[in-house]
Length: 332
Image 1: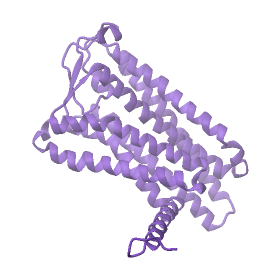
Image 2: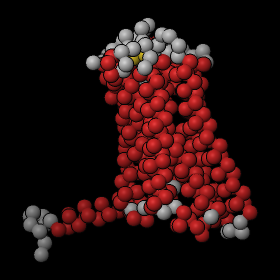
Image 3: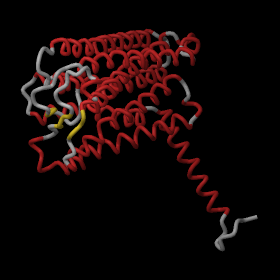
Image 4: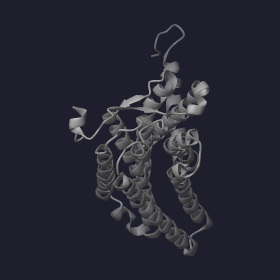
């Protein structure tokens, strides 16, 4: 049935994850420190940010809604790879079907590319807000935000669907051990026998299509923003606010693209297998873990939102205690 769904070209119906072969005796420690530590921080940080943005009405602007979308993507992409990696390291449940592998591959790369598009949208949002402030509300309205979201979904879904479809058409007749802890595109393609030039070219084209397009647009957007802020006759406080806001976005973008570039280049460098696996894991987990920390610490409006929610909860608890008498009867 599986072979029929993939065109009858598959010789392996399941694969094994290579994981961290040099750290087999320290896998539980690795799970505790690296995976659970990062993943729990990822969940708590991004969920807290989503709670604040959703609860505070003043944060329902396009910029913060884009940050909320980024948080949701970070949660999903971490959840896509964490369960299989955890089961593999803890219980040696390291087998995955080809269909399951292709599904995980699609969602991992789809969500990562979606994050790149969201970072691009955030850069364009700051460009309009600072360079065209009088037209911001007209340009960045609900309709435009919805169209940007649909464009991001279509862009990532169509490109990654094609990439995974090409990988699913390969004939896997050699080793079935994926030298990774999740189904990465090139890690799976490297196991195929026969000509894989088309797949490698498609993988390179995807990198160019996202990183090669998004990064220059983001760079030139912030160059333009910088030039406008420096030329403007705004007060020092307004300039500092603009620099601070854009600096926060740039820190998040630098983390994502820098870790991603190292991960993409690591297979071409003579690193140990464990180092390749670690780079691929960090490409997913590190930006998703750090993003909410950067936004939560550096964005005043989000910090105030946290404090506001905390004070409201504290007042509710205090009022509940006041209403209850020592005898357990409510006051009149």
